[in-house]
Image (cartoon, rainbow, N blue to C red; front, side, top):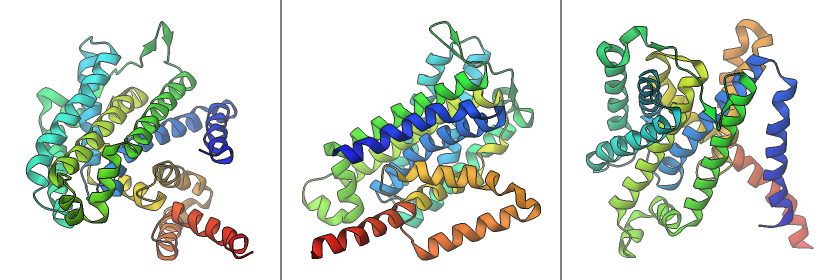
Length: 315
């Protein structure tokens, strides 16, 4: 990695460390929420952006992770084993759902995962003995790290930021590993990938399961962030929002989910000064962006850098 490219992640990390110091608790909450949505979007990006499959179930896995962590921690289990359990449960459920679901591709897979999201939402809402039903689960405590309490908004934000950093490193490693190259080969041309000896179904299932596991990890942090969960945040609309984060940011790129999650999570808040118009303005901005650059924000960045590099190459 060249020095200028290496400086960008360092500058972003420094800005994220310093930014909450000037914010009120609600602003810190929004940054924490952005971190967790980015983790979930990074998982979905492995499925959509690298394996080339469309999933509409990431909101369900966010909910499964949140409920797993909430049920275990309110029963007296420490947060860290609950976090591992949430990721493992979502990884396992993703593999079990993906194994039959991945017999279909693209928009057919989207319908299958959409049905699973609806089923998971009904279980969360109706199985009161397990999830509390419409009343949800309250009293979810925030964790401590080596005796250091993360109860206050700022310490818990740094915990969410650490989770985002770990998830980003994992995705960076996966993309540059032989697995990542196999994922990209599946996205570009599955038939050619199969002719080269790549197991299309195995690697697609692997990308789907890992993405679901990251969704569960994000959900495990989401539960103590809000300290109360009910089924409403884990419906189909959340899955669509996470897919929008991946597409708007730029699918198939590592910075894409960070940019997309920032746009989807923070832009509506920045537009609240317009009062009743903010949702309409937000929708118009997203539509214009997709019309101008279907590759998302990272596509705009690539176009700009290509135009700057063209005169230099010509010279």
